[in-house]
Structures are given as C-alpha cells and as structure tokens.
Image (cartoon, rainbow over all chains, first blue to last red; front, side, top):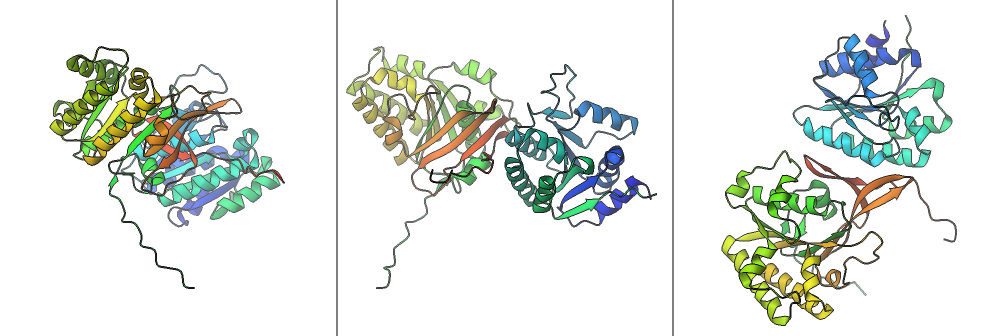
Length: 190
Length: 257
C-alpha cells in the first residue's frame, strides 16, 4: 500500500473532529501532504487550513502544483516566510504571521480563515510540531496546542499535527500524547 | 445557623457587542445603558473596536452614533477596515450616524477653549437632543480625552462624565468613550477621573514579548456583569475583531514570590 493510501485510509477511520498526531519520516512528507489535502479533504468536502512553520508556503504551493492538486479549498497560514526575510511573492491563498513565536497570532489567523470558509467544515494541519519547538519552549507550545485543539474541536474541525520522527524529543512525544486523541504512525510499508 | 437565602439581583439586559470574543469575556455583552471607557495608546485598536460595536448595533436595528472629536468623518470612513459585514446603506439610511464634534461646538456657539459648568450643561443637553431625535441606542465618543482637554479641572470632568453617563443610561443607550493614554501611563485615563466614573473599563495595549509586539485587550471593570479579567490578544480583520487568550507559557510564580 502506498503512503498516500495508507494515510488517507487511517484518516478516514477517524471520528469526526478528531485531533491527531501524525508521526512520519521526512521522506514521506509530500506523500502525506497529498493524502491529506488531495484524498482525505476532497473526499470529506473539507476546507484545508495548512499552518506551515517548516518550509515557506510558496514551496508547498509549488509542490502541490506539480502534484496537480488544486488550491481552491486550501489556505495557508505561513509563519516562516517573514522571518526568512525573503522577498518572495505573496500568494492570495496564504496569510502571513511574522514569526512562529507569535502563537496567538497563529491562532487568530486560523480563526480568521475558519470564519472566511464558513460554508464547509475544516481540517487544520500543523506542519510541524518539531519546527514550532525550535522557536518556542515546551510550556508555551503545550499551552498553545491545548487551547487550539480544544477550540477546533468545538468548531467540529479536524486537527492534524505533523511530527517528524527524526526530530522528536521526549518532550514533544509527551506533548503530543497530551493534546491528541490519537497518534498515527506512517509506516510506509510497500 | 443556616445561611440566609440571598436574593439574586435580576440579570441586566445585555447590549450584545457583536464581537464574539468580547461578548464571551463579558458573559453575554455589555449591560445595557453602561458607559464604558475604552482606553489605550495609539494603534491598539480602540477606534476599530468602537466602529465594529456600532456597525453590529445598526445591523441589529439599534441606531448608532459615532461622534468624532479628532478626525473628520470623511477621513475616518476612508480608512475604515473593509468589514465583510459593513454596508454603506446603514449610513445612507441613518442607522449609523457620524457627527464631527467641532460641528456641534460651532452650532452651539461653544467657542471657548475652556468649558465651565454652564458649557458642560449645554453640551450634555445637545447630545441628549441628538440621542432622542435619532433614537440612538449605541454611541461612541472618540475621544473623550479631547473633550476633557476643554474641561480642565477634575471636578468638571467628573461632572461631565456623570451627567453624560446618567443621560445616556436613562435612555437605554450603551456608550463607549475612547480615552487616549501614552504607553507608559499607569492609569487608564489622562486625568485619572474618567475610569472611576465609567461603568466599565476596557484596556487595549501593545505587549512586547521577546521582540514580538502583540495587540492586547483586557476588561478591568464592568458593572452589572461577571466578566473575565484576563488579558487577550486581538487581531483587527475584515471579519471583525478576533480575540484569543494571551499565552502564559506555563508561568508559575517563583517559590516565595
């Protein structure tokens, strides 16, 4: 089974509005994104809000373009481009947070996009806990996830938190256990 | 001895601000007829908060009035956030009214730079007439600080705000009075009187945390309702003011501290 099929099958087995930690190897990154944005969100008729603190939204948008995934129902909260001081073009499907340390602003932008996409339910993807942990201490990050996940659950939205196993620490694992309903492993067996 | 049954005071009718986060903080909205001081330094969102309060009011069928003391209405409207829910028809239909305070001063012949007791009464009566004539249920004066400049003494300021609050409250009109303070100010108004007289105080501010500047909002006082006194982070957006709790980062008081 391909990684894309494996991940979409696991997501489909989830209860509504679940908060899930998705543990993966870096090599499966784009297959997981495809499973999430193309297969799962499309099948469930969801608007996707993709929070990126790992790579700039333009890089993901370019990858989606190559994968021929349409952006109509995909929105980005990009909290990495501005601190990189790159003069990259702003994309109309992306809104920008000055820094991944501005966790409240990140929550506010997610809330803004949820309100803008009122007609459909949402899936919120946090990419990733590891990169957020570079910029924030564990206490504030745990508090952030706790508030965000509960808020999203009340809005009947799915929350998916990416975690790269290569960069996980004990603290990150504890944090994910605390805030997630389920922890899914991407096995990538062929 | 069994505790005596205490009679619960009747729940006061609420003026729903329409700003979800603020209505949650206030346990349902501002108690109707309250006079609330909205205070903070420049660029912290006071005017946007007030405008949104008025727009939601007029959309809900409550005639709303914005009295601008510092900025001409035309300029204010050209800089207004393009709210998704704002309809210029509200202005055309007279449900959302903008008046420049200097125009009122001119009409009343209040040319003196310093107002005495008599001028205070003239101004209050003029405002009462406008509120009655237009059936205003929500009002904002932006800013009360510039009115207070003309009142000079603490007694006059106290007298003005007391009379204003009483006049508006008796008409069921809920009001926001904008107060400008410098960031370093440790009180909530320039003269230190306004916050004591007002029924409520909402403080907006800028919080610097590790080089990041966050806009914040805190309700420190609101008569007639239980409310949160925590600090929130706000964002000014086209869907209106959004609020989330300020993260504390697991801050715990040091032992013995």
